[in-house]
Image (cartoon, rainbow, N blue to C red; front, side):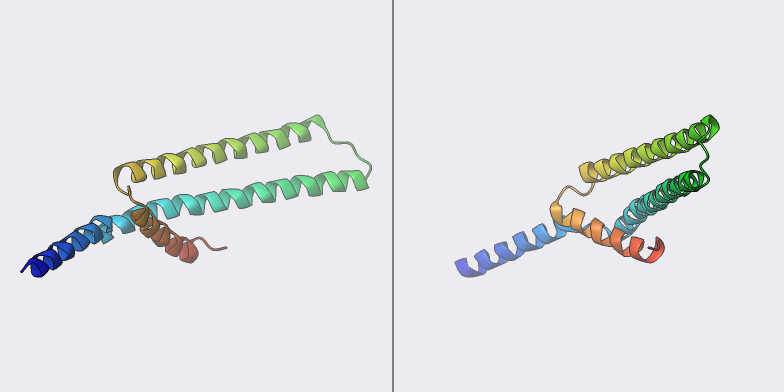
Length: 131
């Protein structure tokens, strides 16, 4: 009798623990979509930064070949583009951090839950963001 009771108790504990680590699939999908969208935006912004830096470098190389000087307007334009990209990057990084912090604090408190979210996000990012 003790063995049956102990086995039943153990089964209930295992069931309770496994249920506590699971997140509602619909909620997980919504949260993963939200984070994936932000990650896709971050990838687009990163590519925009790389493209902008490359364009600036190519223009400067072209000026060097022509033995022309960089004008004050060119410098001002480059600085303006850099400031804009820096501000947009900081804003997006802050949004991502705040969103993740909120989700982790309120919903994904356990490592297993966070891993579920990470896997769901990666699945969406790999199919929707492009590379």
